[in-house]
Length: 134
Image (cartoon, rainbow, N blue to C red; front, side):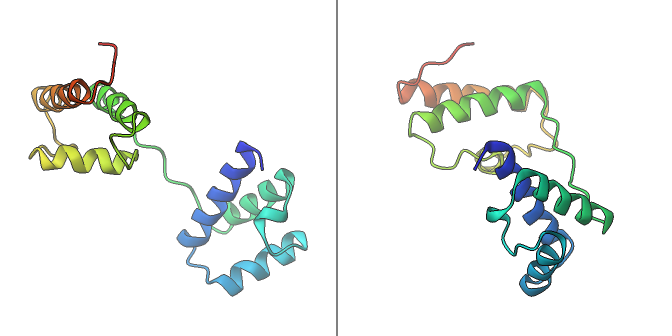
């Protein structure tokens, strides 16, 4: 399975949830469109066709969140910690949870708040012997 195929399958499954389809309805839709009842058996072209059909039915993927430069720096440090095996969950959600535990609301954080979060992550990197670039 290629990376693009995996992304299409992920989008289709998101569409299934957002459209409120139960499993039986979902499988029937797949069979009607492609003759197959599993995305893993489909080609990229068939997956794109299914996704197009779901978009015509009202599914639209949510736009990705735009991160501030400070949050991007936090994210980079977080991923370094994950790659080093220090952080278990590399998701943005987990990072925001970490920042919230510092009593900082990521949605309303000031530049000073985010500087405090960045310094905290840098200190964590230093304790874990994880090298980073400033």
